[in-house]
Length: 280
Image (tube, rainbow, N blue to C red; front, side, top):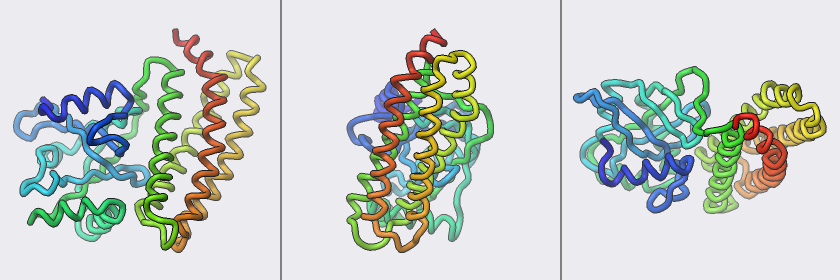
């Protein structure tokens, strides 16, 4: 069972699609469920994470305690875990990073938040970094209707872009872009590309067939997808430049955010009532 500190966080996380207040407010947080190494029972723990392309990284810091956290020992014994992102729940395979790969990942974490270095300085153990890679399978969206599913996915993109804008602004607008910030930008670009591809190839054709009167809406949304794709390409090009200045990247992120917010708002206004009625 979760401990007394974790349980309220877990409940708030699940009730609000990953949003929590207090100590973890505004953080990238997931719920990690491992299988007890001794008990064989599931144990759920809120942990911070770092985007890393098609996987996420979690760090077994235990706030610099002398011993690894229990969840780390659990996944060593049973590397198949369950991840809750607030939007999706999925099975994942846990891999402990070793050697240079671990050191590079931890350095990225420290560059984005010096608190990780403070934790390492407090302990004699080498703080582990663990990659969680999703096991292929149908997505499990934490929503009760198709309309709610679209809304929670949209809100996840809004949240991530807000975090990225905040992180870039706090890093200053001169000097090179931090490596983890570059990864964060590229990860959200890929996520948006995948989301819009899914809509273009599955959701929109299905709606167009069932609701011919939505044809003008579908046409507009597809055109907006094309404009957003161009903005994603521009952001990826800027971010891929290792000498890109944060101020330049921030300008591209804000351009994308403005266009995307208008698109998401229109899509929600036009499609959510239809989708909710279809699944009522």
